Image (cartoon, rainbow, N blue to C red; front, side, top):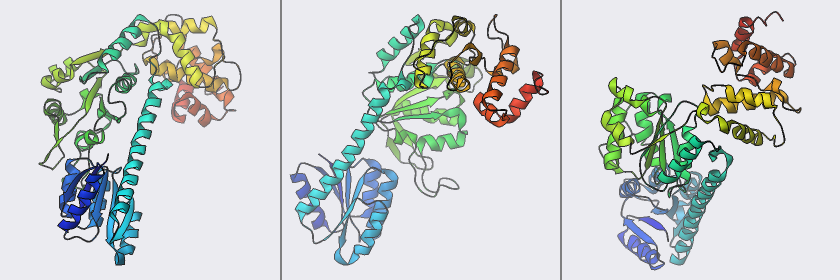
Length: 443
């Protein structure tokens, strides 16, 4: 059954509509003005809002706009007098589900309300099905059979069904977001949103408004109320990547969310309850940040309810053949065979970029091989790593690999340097720099 908000400045009309809809099993809240309606929508979720058009001082059009801003999936049905059809059409253009002209048949009202509620249920069901499909898709596979991978998989399986806050620790490229998504998809919240945010990619002032939302007029450019990511993730999971880069002001608000499950939008004194599971991740030891006084110790222990440590690829070298198979299958190369010497080189490499680096390497090899067989000459160490002089392993000649990689890319691109740079995942300027460094410019 649906949760419905009825809005009309005629108390008798509210009572009649409320009675008719409750008789059909729906939960109905009735209010007698537009501002009361907006307050109710801010405080709780509704499937359908049924609102009169002609009200003072806040009319039905303003209710429609407010509902669509606060909760885009809530259906709004406009009640209007016969002579106001033009306004009702404008309401449809602004996102109303339907309009009904007075006087109306209560049976007709119930039918339209249930149609609107059913469409909302269908949207939510489709979203849940998409989430379930993603959970079974290759992007959420924790590929590998190495002991470290088994341990990781077991930790995820144990913590996923709980409501515990999780702190995922590991080097860049180890798949921290992948693990967070796996926890979410195996949890009771899997049908609700998974909302990731990279704390390092957003300035502190902007991060606060992104996470918690803001009130109209809170700062220059805040032209309307806006919900933040905590509210957008209601019922689901909020993934805070690179949590160690969040500023102290944001950390203080995060601590309050973890302790009280409440937020305040920026510039808004009103408290709002939030129902969100938090998973955080960091690629640097937070203990060091605490010692440097850039991270709150109390927040650290609130996050450290259940730590999950991501193993670096060098500690799970046995997984490399399986990961290569996995990436090749995703690229459409289901039947291929790498030379044994190539696989030995991959297993010997230290992988400073971890699984992400391996994935990029195999994607480059796939592009360079084109329609032909994938060979050792296509599986080359990242040209940027080679130019930086990073040491992958005793048996690798980085300069030679970089030369072969650049030569192969130029050959595949027919000599077009811009296209070759795109294949290599670097800029055209970087390609020229590498060629000069390796003595290839004249060639």
